[in-house]
Length: 147
Image 1 (cartoon, rainbow, N blue to C red):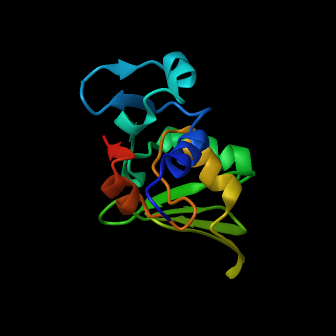
Image 2: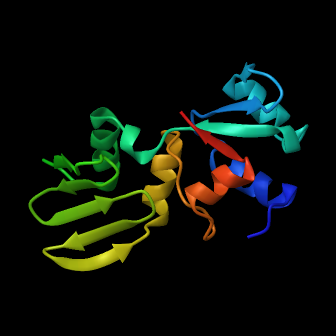
Image 3: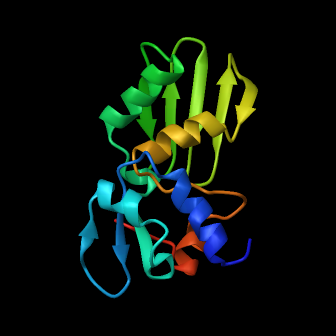
């Protein structure tokens, strides 16, 4: 994907209902969510989103995610580097890492790179791959910065 304002606006739109904050590259001023919504079209070339890496997701956010997707009585396990998270209940296993999501039902893969789960993670302000553009590429383009 090319580094264009149209593509950047598309990425920003993915976080429109999220809690990320938007900053300008020439100041440390953080825009509130309301201001961010009003200003998304203005000065986009100088703006970036401040997002959290997947390793920063809280247990509370994970439990909320589980509740939304219907994983009840879930247990959460984190990998050594915290970039891999396993959520399990009696029948389902959900594996989330820096670039992918895989859901298993009784050991059989039933879904990978789930759009709904990515949208939920974005609503928490978590940086996610978008349109085959990795988080690292988004950082390289200057579209996002990680907290």
